[in-house]
Image (cartoon, rainbow, N blue to C red; front, top):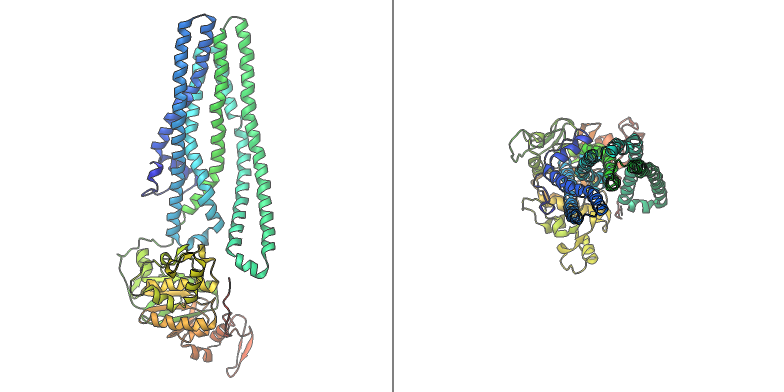
Length: 607
């Protein structure tokens, strides 16, 4: 796999049982690239390690006044230099390729998992952790995968040099062969502590990233309530904790680096001191002493890769563990489904709550708990994040359909839809039946002022469809983003459309026009709206009150307001305890649910 061939047509099925298993799976899936890096690494390191022998031969040739051997040694050094240059060039190329392709594979796997899980992902994993895994963690994972082959080449070279020294000059070679493993493994006792400190640093950095992402996402709200300084102080404290943790981690790694310099130096001093004594006794020649001295100096280069692989594993292990945690998440229902793909139709029925949305009608659902309403809306779309009784569309359980078929049949728009950056034409270019034109959907969602705002904010965009929408639509108000998302949902024209609080951020006059446009555009189609707005409820064909996970009442808005105290408590925001006139019923805090006010909303919320 080359960089120009990315992305992978199929990144594969990862072994996400643990972090080390994921790293091993990545290494196995890049065996070809790892073998190339190993071969070029051996050429590079062996050529570097052979230079001391050449120097020793050259010195001895000068001592013996042999011009022929000196010329041969010069040719051999030229050959080694060529091997160093060629090996280093192609080793770097292979290593970078392995690093980028490994990181790209993990990113593709994470993206595929995010698409597979949908909204369930952020309910199981914090948003900051998802960002950390998909950015910094994939780089650390790729670093370890590519460093492994270079470490293998360095280790094989060190073993070969030790064996060569033992054969070339046993008196000094044995000393080097015994001392080198001690030098290489001396830092191992410090690695657990260094790893723990690095883990603490990454944990604190993840918290700071999550806090920063949450702050940026809610910046408009923070400015509205004057909370910028409060959250700035929180982030400042979090960043200082990251700094202190990073300093403590760096101290340990600097100690390991000191050992990697100090111990090879002590080994070199010992070899030189012992070699000088042997040379004085006439047991070794000057050329042999120079060869062994140079070889020990050169061994410091491959020994650096022992420290690097230790650092790479220490940093990549928790990163791989976090990536494996995300990649191991699964939906409670199989996305492939147990039924063949089909387009069901009929009434939408949830056995868990008893909610029934008749085909072709506009059904409004009133639920006092916004979180429970969001979970119910998700369940109506099939394949929810939490296990439960499957919702029926006609006689077909949606959970038994393939995920794409279920999404085609039932579209759920949650209360916080996301607008991606790009032109308005690209934003509205979604899978659709073709029966609803973008102009009709925008008109039904009352988006004329949105179009004007986009044109004014774009350069050289006479056609509103060519105007650019910023990331998450941050240049628009909350109500404008909400209406644009509603228009996008209307364009798809699904068999069943489920909307969760689609008008919570618009004024009452606009909400009235949206309700009329929604009825007109969705005539003959099944529409379910979760809302507590009397303006929407009054225009619904059928209103259902859901309380504590079950349907309590069904009817039309005016009848339920007059006859059902719990319903009236939600849509009128009655006090928690109130005597109901003419009914002799006292509502408690459990019954008086919190809902939307009937007071007109004249100004759109900016958040």
